[in-house]
Image (cartoon, rainbow over all chains, first blue to last red; front, side):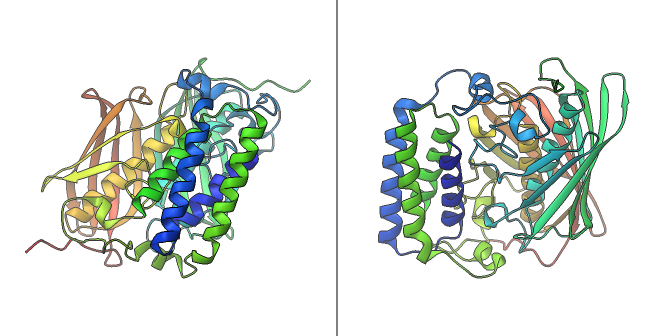
Length: 204
Length: 204
């Protein structure tokens, strides 16, 4: 399933930057439609939440470890099993959550820049996953993103997030997005803790 | 090209909710990799900004009219020529920008809900496109999203945005996301006007 998702990611990038004759486009379209049809019988038809939470065939999603991708395998940001995700790689060091990604043409906004909304999307996941790693998982109450300079497309980006403070059920995480060590955008979140979301299980 | 993008969208949804035997997954992976390889010679290799702004083969993107999709054909939110986009449909009534979309499994966050980051992504495009329609196009300075209740997956959603005020080069658009007429999230933006972005050309 990981290879299939990677293949679809490559296809998305190709199609986004395609400059091909009509017959090539028609052939590709027909082939992809045939693949979709061949997969129709195997579409998971249950409730969305079960599709979201069920285990990938090659292993249970782990609630241990230090990688949000294991908590959220179907996430549109970090999920290896969602073709929409770049995916962003995230790693928890016990206190802070670190991320890295290079975003290509599908994530383009203004010329040569990452789409501002994609940056907000990534920040929501970064702050939300940070909370989960701290056993403070909850729903986003408010998310505020400040764009300080252009975030370049096709360049390695780094991110870092930490918990500023908590107040009762409210958690206040903050995060930074950087290119070559220079902050291009900052985010502040107010999250509301919830038992509906999985907490982190400490390793033995 | 529109049909090809629609086919890839259908593939993304199928793969996101796939529950298939290994051989089916392997066959699909091989076929998709072959399509990607067949498209390699036709990948646009120029600067990202040109890939972003060049015309679709079946018509110049129009700077007239009332649909942001014509301004941003490669947008990850409204762009019909970007397989990542749902796409969100947006329509300008001369004062306010209206949007509609139904988001499926790839955009899932918490159980049965749209991912909060996807909501922020859509709001950034909604507010930014609103500005362009008012000839006030610019870059996002800050974006703040307040999540008031769950936004359901697989249900028709509506959105609406308008300009609250302007101050010099600053534009302050606001927007709402609704399900069945009830607001599920609100957004406020501060955008900085820029001549780097295309303005709207009035129809004759």
